Image (cartoon, rainbow, N blue to C red):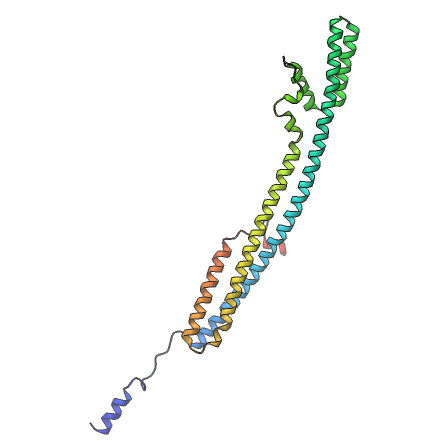
Amino acid sequence: MSNEETKEVAASTPEEAPKKKSFISESRLEMLIAIFLGVTAVLTAWATWIGSLHGGNQATNYAQSNNAAADANSMYNEASQSLVQDMMTWNVITEYKFDLALAELKNDTTQTQMIEEKIEQVIADSCTEEFQDAIEWAFDQKEDVTPFMKEGYVDSYYKEAQEKYDESQALLEEGKQDNKNGDTYNLVTVIYSLVLFLLGIVGIFKNIPNRFIVFVVAVILMIIAMVYMFTIPMPTGFSLGNFF
């Protein structure tokens, strides 16, 4: 083989053949890293802000729940006092009813009329409409019963207090949910921080394939965090318009 033929063969070897350009060049990879760093930074700020809003709602709901519980306790005490007072009034009416029965046995018309007027006066001055209805119900019964035996009547004293207590419990549950949502947003923020860390250390790897692997892992984590974040409810009453 001549010298010229040897040179031609040598020139056709892979070492001297022109290399193909890789799709992921260093400049492209750096540009993608810069873009995803910016996106991740924005998402991290968003998750931190929304998490803080959930924390604020949690504190507000807990405070309102405590206030409602205190109001409910106060209402329960007032209802108990009203119940005791109505029981005492009923005892007075019962005594008058006993005196009325004696007067009727004696056919004492004047005494009977006077006692009936006393009973009517006590009912008019000391009884609410609900208590008057319960008294009429008791008077209409053949057995010797009290107004407090009427179904649901005693519970009616505590109706408003129970409603306030239910309101307190509902606010407490909302506060617990806000606390849970806030903790979840904190977890999302941690994942975004990990993404920022991975994107930040890509440059220490010399080989582009290694850089690309770390970059892909970071992007996958970012996507997982985004999907997870969008499944978390926004704070109650949240609207961007409220902040402008």
